[in-house]
Length: 505
Image (cartoon, rainbow, N blue to C red; front, side):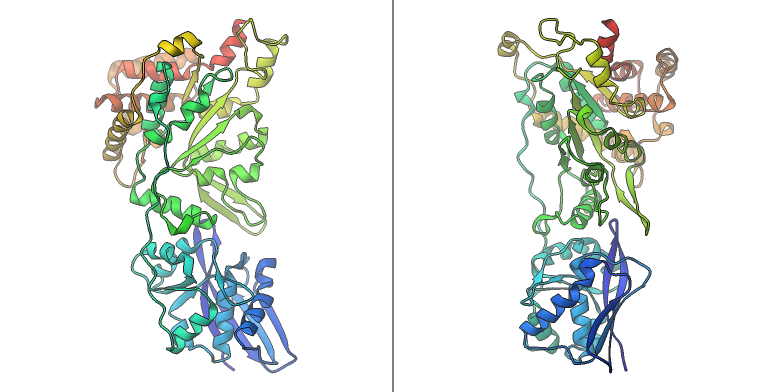
């Protein structure tokens, strides 16, 4: 009594863990059993496989069919096990050749009529299969996605019948077309922002160094308008970064048409989003917004309106560059190297400091509103600026600023200097750089030490000020960080403008 085996994968974050689907058909009462710690979606594969075989005119033998998902102590989640289970059952029935199936891994969801539907995780599965010297069997629509794994044999089938015909030699499945690069979406132009020179400069520095930034100002001051123009300043992802980001989006089932993500993602969750939606988690421990924004931007408008627990959940990934979803069965880690851009009003009514429009609870309303952002969270934000709205007259007379293409060229040059400095395997931006790699002139170092003592900067604040100063020097094309660069960096950090308003009251 032989056992049929088909390779597949379970997912732990963006890592694909090998799973062997084993099927034994033995004498006994007719039954279809699945063991190996399957979840509800995997357990329901029994009925989908049975229906798909019936649609092709096949039937399970009136025997005991046992399916084991090995290793048995790893939780198996998702409907992508439908296809490998069906293939293993067919091999056990001697419909498919076992030796040829052993050269492939498989994943896909079955319809009741035998069609193979799209599933999440094809790209990391293809990369893992290539690493083990296997080919990959996947849904037809995701063949281009699997082809990004490189030198790998991909069978992208529309339905189960075509796979049977291919392995039996009566039909030849064509190789899937090469995957396409993701097209860049239309970005808004920074030239639309009139005046606001300090804010424009801060946005350029944040883009050049990948620094976190918080903008504070009354409603209509231009905070969201500035944030929406940040993607147009960022350079394309490197091939290595594009693969990282695409794997996260593949696991989340968001890789559109198998197109590799080549532009930094821009995520803007609503303030009603739960902690699991932002940090990751849920029933299947899916990646959250912090991971979907990996190597890109996470824009949080009206930051104080987010639940306190959600905001505090940002602290660990902001520092470590990854987030860990802890579950009883396992700890799942997703990459989360994102750039946080926040926007908020100075108080709940939005007009703290404006005597004509502020509410009667000032300054108490500002104190209550601003303390929703904790000190440890603010300490991880490199640039904090106050956005002052322009009057209609100032707006009409303000000259047109530099276009995004001009600023983006300076940002790209600064990013290139950072890559040359830190190397291929080091930090990719100044926001990630180690303090030992940042060269300050003696005058700049002394000035920063004195300022840090006077402003009572934490060790983190001291290091982040150095990093922002390094970015300002990179934009100027200067090798060593000078006193003027540090002074500008401290001007962005040393106080929270809204809290200063409250203190003045």
